[in-house]
View (tube, rainbow, N blue to C red):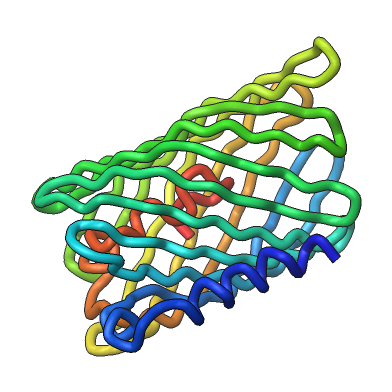
Length: 242
């Protein structure tokens, strides 16, 4: 039952948006496939995700994200995140809260985020804290991404993260570094993406590969979507370019 709370909350948030504000929204919805290779075996995962960026007055915007992913060897995971950001001329900053739920485990996350916009690139990062009361695990970390626009519709991503989890007096580090690319077809709402990340930790190591297909709305280019606030979506995920 917990996993449906996130979806219901996102729909409730959308229903409260006025018609005028909704006409100014932007965002995307996508399908993705991920391949995870580890020392203990391999797994494939399939998912859907999306976000909507809603102007809420002045320089403020709200971003609502939702996703569902399932794999061959584990339970499905549903997640939702809400951001409140302030968009300046050359930067954006704000905070977020999120929930991720799988059978028997719910993770709550809170954090702050900042992005600086250059002429042809974006530097973004966040700091976060997460807790899973069901498993008695607390975690915190920092995630960063540098996004380079070769053109308004061709973006290259460089990402990295540092994290630590603690449980029952023991702790473990998990760090990652990755690359990604996304291309949006000119005069089209559709885009394709691919990414690779290397995860290294005290417990396990993994190579993560992913591809995505997205439908974009409300913005005419990937760069415009980035400047509207999408630079914050997915920041810190295993595949930050997707």
